[in-house]
Length: 265
Image (cartoon, rainbow, N blue to C red; front, side, top):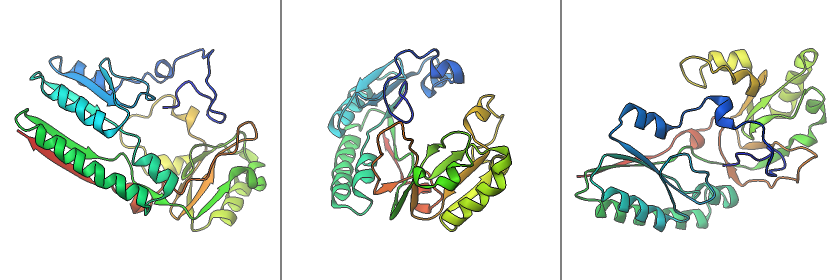
């Protein structure tokens, strides 16, 4: 969603030399489906701030528009794949936390609206999957990477990825010092792996290693197991706001997601 923006300042990059998809040689799920099954048409129903990745896109800035867009597409008898996405409850969880009344109200409304949509899809021979791409963990402690001067002194460049799943690029002669400092600050909060350990555990899945992986993955990766988050920021950008809940760690709250399947024959 932040494509063509600076990772730290979030300012638009207007003179990008290459497109990210060109560099990664990435084929979207929409293209994969249509190439494998030429009689299937792939659609996405997303908020307007999401950059379209399918040839067929419908903008939906709230749950009502999302349901309407899906219903309209399903009235067409042709075979199709539809991916619908909404920024909530994710954005609400980040802002208010997992136990907040704001999140509870949204989930109740979402359940009612999606259930009503599924009932209206009866007779369209549609199979509906309702799920999340991740869970959330409430955060009780947030530490800015800029506060960790001993760790910063060990790094070649700022860390990357996510606050609870962080990639570090550590100087070769500072590896032992980095491990000691990280253990001092985050024992019981994060698990620290070397890149070789991380890849050996197949956290990124099976299959052939992408040729660009080493460009993005540092020589150390830390993954959260507690309720702490490390803010990844630099002196170049504005201070990032702390989040009341976030994701990408190893806790069950982040890794376990519900799955609802409804067959609208």
